[in-house]
Length: 417
Length: 173
Image (cartoon, rainbow over all chains, first blue to last red; front, side, top):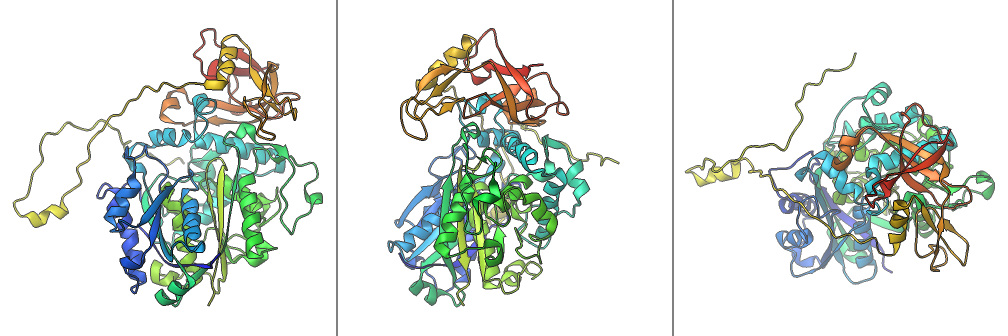
């Protein structure tokens, strides 16, 4: 396999609703931004693309992908759509990586979008809940926040995690997003605000949950030769990993922890894994990505992480899956300040999904773009301020997650210069 | 002090409109506000439960049917017709009508279809000696009364709707 580099990225500002544009020109905003950042790249040099969007329900439009492909002027180049719930963007990024790594394409564009404003929030929740077993789960009261609430209630029972610790995640991510011009929601909030917000599904309140958004994001990937021609700041995709788990939470096993190199079986005596408190797919994806990138101690070897915080609880659970701390220590990890900007391993320096928004198909690619700018050291150029720039960031991790932990992708990005 | 709500909720009521103004100067068209229309959509699916049909027939007859792998012995509280671990075809067996709360939540909001039923409790039930769990509603307890480990027992609707909600759980004690 060949080395693959990210050479450019673009994001349309995520927002509650974009009635001013249909999805094709919205993707073009992100695409043009990315093309302008690598002025030597012409449409002719692009070999193909991968499209990322989650639900056909939101637009009542099938084959939206091809409508973007023609609007961007990419026909008749090769293309396909990938889909895997909330992880659609991450899967798209990894599929584009595979196109280049395999030698099939030298330059591949990954584009993603979602227009969730076309239905009201509660209808949107219905569409999302259809990503649970329609015979056994959806009819009982299909609601994703309810599913994640059940998972974190068990996490609290097993490990003593508290609502205050969940709230600290929200406070951190909103604090970071305040300096991100792409963020959908800008608010200064304190732990009390999160705790006092209306409860949606106990223990998760309004400020523990990301919102629905309209938005698009684009990543351009290339092989080493093309990357060198296009930019003096290419970012290497050091490795990709992906894991899966059973759709129904009821089916998750209660077995042994999948160990990372810095862990031992003694760490988890008596812990039944993953149950519904942890994401086995996240751990599997991390294990594969770390092995392929030669990472043995993630907390020491990663300079930052952009992870899928659709819920504050999933950020805490994901600290553990990624091995930033041991299983059960996610609550203490946020309390320690380690994931804060300026901490040993900032998590969601962009503000994450909680504050930036979550137009599903675009989300995983947005994370890639923010991570790319971090590693390039170009946050000031793209954000108009350098408050979120992590100095000397050499290696970052992006994590994309489908509900309720069914598909999880992890990609490691490195600065080669 | 609780902040006062200062925003009216968005609704889908809208107004039927048959025409809009149009500028003489065509260059003004790019400044036009978007036209947003209401577009209803209704479907009746013909949904087959297929190999899982005995589970729903069981509920109509006040039984919760699980499946059991004859080869590796894994017991599914939510039916799987083929074993996830060894691929064998499973057999049906009757689950006990009592179990324990493995985890729970109370939903104060929900998907549009269930919004009118809020607040409602969701639980995952664990049954003695059964490997996987079962998702159901819990009736009769409020958010501050539910605990992990509580014993619950099954109740059935008299008139079956052939949905997993034909069974629900109530406190056993």
